[in-house]
Length: 114
Image 1 (cartoon, rainbow, N blue to C red):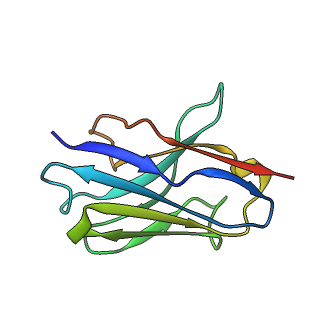
Image 2 (tube, rainbow, N blue to C red):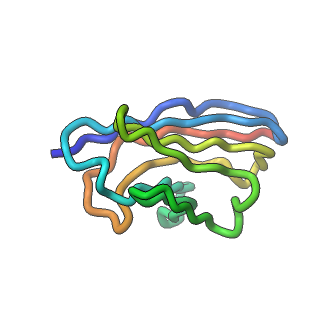
């Protein structure tokens, strides 16, 4: 059973940067496509970026050119580098497989002030 633990969120001013991490425990991580999702109150959880086991990446239009997803399979960790942050990026960020079949972690809160 893979468990996901997100970390690295915080408060940042618009235009700033953050890198968030997702550490996976258990086996089977390296072969999965992994993604970052985000959710704001009252809205659905949306996929914003994913990376395949081979390193191919894909981004939602809203974050393309600003966010970069990467993975370190040796460390069972997925990262999301977020640059040029905007207030509308404020959300709780979660990682999970794509398509989603793992249990959700607790997420990490990212707050961007204007």
